[in-house]
Image 1: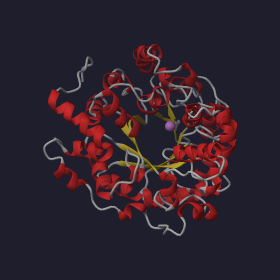
Image 2: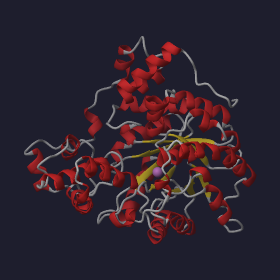
Image 3: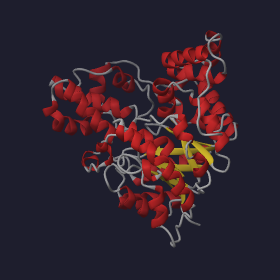
Image 4: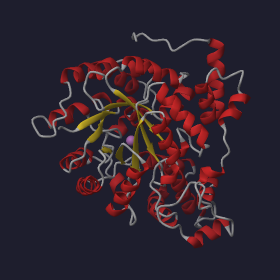
Length: 456
Ligand code: CO
């Protein structure tokens, strides 16, 4: 059987290329054609899509999902879920996690891809339990990174834990795009040997090696790979769907996607790409290759954040020093993978260490919380001397951070009785506070659903 493809254009594609700004009309534009391509799944929802709907597009993310489900009759819809952080940035109580999973599935999600930034299994448990309870397909993603502790043996051990947790499949989530072809071959081979679950690979083209990495992973037996339709592929996004489909033709890995439907969908989406190029949201810079990602092992988004942070402080000349400090901070923190929110936290700490002239003289609140164990267990032990310098003799928790959180949902439902028109509204408020409250207020006053030119 050939390799299966998950289409990412409608989630990671526009998230990586132009800050997740595609509106619902554009998301639905070619969905009927994409539905006939023969994908394993279409990824459509996640933290950034949800956030951008409320914050920038004045759209209800739940309505987008329902409309997509109406159009997409043959193909499974997939979402990305940040474990105990759901689609937000902090840990939420288990009842909110469960309710969010339930409502996601009810509104149209088939596959939930759950990950934790630290690969702390305890931060995945509530989401996995809920996904199984409400009949969703549960994929657990391991956050891929490189470090002395992130060996093949580490990931095999993690995969075994994931399998016993009840996942239906495993995804290697290389959010930074640092996975090299030979390492992918080795990792996928080891995972295939040690678990029975289907293995999926998710990476990014930022550093220029991704297509080679996919090919080696495919040769090693990977079952599914994530690709983006041509108008939203390459650069900081995923490899191109059409190209991979053609490249693997007449091989044992042939994905056998419907080329005619792919062409039709790409033709419909091309003007959307042009629109974002023209209005500047899609910066051609993100479409070119940046091999420094591999050199420094920092994700593209983090690199541009560091450059901006330094520019604001008038310290652009310190970039090289900061990039050298990032691996030191990471080591002190026990080698967390550089994914949201850890990438921002480690980056900011590295900037402060360089600019203040003394390491850990200034420490952001989040790093302080992290050292208290509030994000979960670090992959390797943190540097105790540095911990002591920052938090003194404070108690460090070793239990699951969410164990401290009391149920939140019913309380919120009561509090926003007049405003929230549904449980979905309550969940939006639970995750995005004022941003969601403002949106729902505007929506209730206008009482207008999303206007569409496409028919659903
Ligand atoms: Co990604």
